Length: 82
Image (cartoon, rainbow, N blue to C red):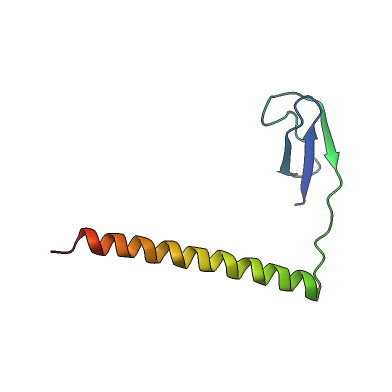
């Protein structure tokens, strides 16, 4: 069951649709228009440089989440300190 990307010709909304047995979507999810254009999907290419970039982005995300969690934990501790 492939996923296809579409763009609405009326409003420009882009979206993905899981296409079952070749049934195309009938209307735009945003505006309801029936003029849809199927877009070419680019394959995901993995290389050492894209892997390194993805790992760096994940590390930044994890550090930000850890900082937020530590901040929330400290706020909790201060509000429940008797």
